[in-house]
Length: 150
Image (spheres, rainbow, N blue to C red):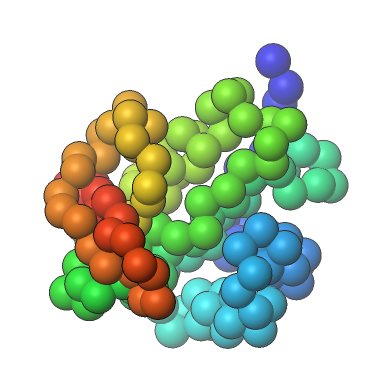
């Protein structure tokens, strides 16, 4: 079993640029949008954070927390976003560990519940997430699943 390093971006702000570029490469959201959110987190403007899994000097997994993850239910906030694990590293518990870190970090700041939008089924339930409702994604034709962690 590999030893991965899990970090909160506040603990290792030198990863900001690499993280923004990595998330951009996965989700095609502009790098600047990630940098803006990360800067707000690093400056203390928000407690909504960014979390990475590192394999040495390489990002292999990550996710963030933002106000709204591009859906019509603006009342369901904050949202876990940009959940991604490199294909070669999937099935090793990386996303589950990151989800646990995120939930614990948000709860330690009094931020609960938290939400996430996904098209996956039977994954998030393993980590204490419950299906809540369907939401309409911005510019999406079909509805997506909204989960809650209390």
